[in-house]
Length: 481
Image (cartoon, rainbow, N blue to C red; front, side):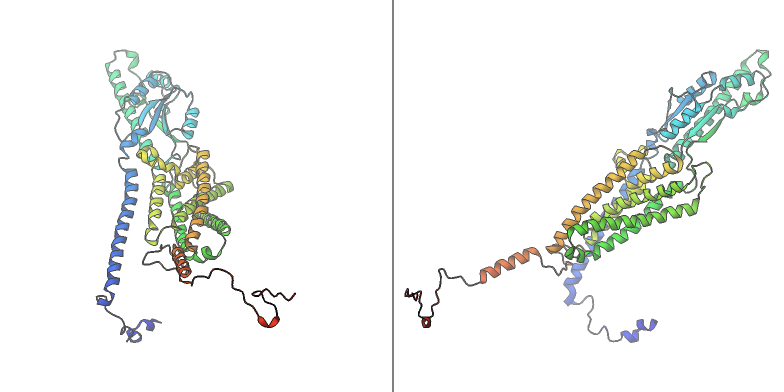
């Protein structure tokens, strides 16, 4: 088989060809060099567009951590609660840490857990009875559990990366600092007292008066969670892009011969079918890799969870497919990568970062299908931060809007094809790469006008043809009567 590439078989094939430096093709070489320089400029714009979108979204992210609020909740009401609350609120504010605030509206640990799961980032709770237990231990009680003094409540299912990088570390670091500070103050006070009754305390309570336990009300901190939905949707999107490019390059006969209403129905149906298939593969891959019980603390993975996972991916893939196909139908080949880059980067960024940690421009991430799909998946799997109405509403609105826009795009594309404005690959009339068997409509109009001008002028009046042999003549007025 490799013999077909042998030089012996190619011998003499180049005899009629010329060198690339030959004068006969110098003009073509010059055109190609200019085209390649244009491609280099376009590629430069595309790569800087992608890099700017990404690094702009994560630039100064640690400084913007102040946009995240965490709360201290005093359910004790005694000396421990008052002192811990004061120490927490007096914590030095740095650019890379969340802001501490106090919440006075919650009256139980369960209420705090429900609030954090629904809308909060995290909370440090001084548990009820903490002061009474510590006083009893300092008075000589044998048993004391320091970790019962405080509860750190977090919700990694809200936004995994932000929770792990900032919220969880802030809760733990602050609780440890408070524990050390409280112990130092208590030991100092003990050394300064002269009351004999205070000389036989529980020394474990004396040197470790307050501790904490951590509760994750919506655990999503398993190994793959920060990138699970991101890479799943990214694989779907990249798979769709190849199909969309192929559809654009091979759809010329359809636009030339098929009715508009059929095309306007066909493409959305094909895209929906493709989205259903690819998102099914993503749901099956997640099921095979992690579960049904991917995390003993997370919500149970049921049959309904699988279908929610599947159809959420379908909505994300369908909206992105409609969006990109609108662009591909009208762009020339050298520009087709630009909308792909400007679509992929913000969508990926929206799932690995959060709005609180990005400049205000990146509020556009609220509209990213990746963000809304990822938020739905995290809620489905963990129950954290329910924003179902907003997420579903955005995805449905985007699908409706992109379907309407695609209908208009198909109409415009068909007009361009039928009038010879663009060819199968998307090159427009006037480009050196343009090639279409359908004549350009202005050329057709000019040819028709030229032919009309070249016809001989018509004579005015009516010519009468008379036959003399029938005895009837319109010329002489003899009508045979």
